[in-house]
Length: 220
Image 1 (cartoon, helix red, strand yellow):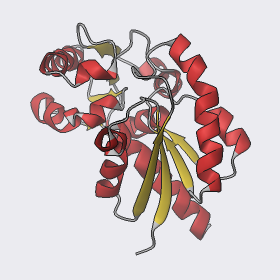
Image 2 (cartoon, rainbow, N blue to C red; image 1 turned 135 degrees about the vertical axis):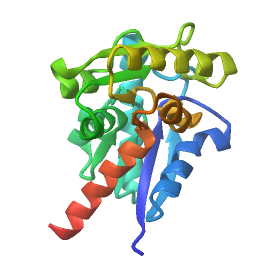
Image 3 (tube, rainbow, N blue to C red; image 1 turned 120 degrees about the vertical axis):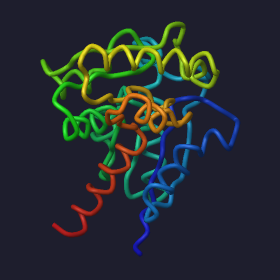
Image 4 (cartoon, one colour; image 1 turned 180 degrees about the vertical axis):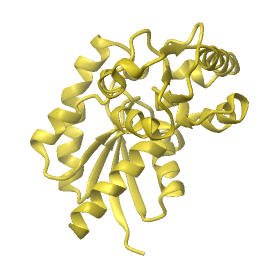
């Protein structure tokens, strides 16, 4: 089996190696042909959760993209549902750059016609809005959840589950998770079982699009 070297850019600063590599390990689990290398941006211990934190993150992400391409990565995944700096990185590197947002939203429309999103912000990331358009049923977040750190608590997990259930009651036939921190806690599996509708995981989705990009490069 051919192996692809994938650079994973985390937008949550951490010195915890297990947490840093978690999305990469998930990608390798889902896609055994991937060999991942993970790096995180500096000085953003609460990640990206609003316009201000995204603005200061963009140049950091671009710098990491340059470095990881130079280190031999064949594709880059910016593992964030807000797709921060995806366009900017595409302007400076020659390899595919994939974000979690548009990937998840696009795949959600394969599974349903009335999507809702579940994340950590009041405003739905732009990639989801562009893909869903007027099909969007709603966008929700758990009560009291404001950052990825909240998702790692039992209270944050339960609040997110309750918010997703309300979207199902409003008529959603598919839920697109709009925070990759939800991949960290593996909520897509339990939500899917509870709600009886498809729940799209951002890390799994961004990996699938990355694989397609690499196969398209090799075979077209």
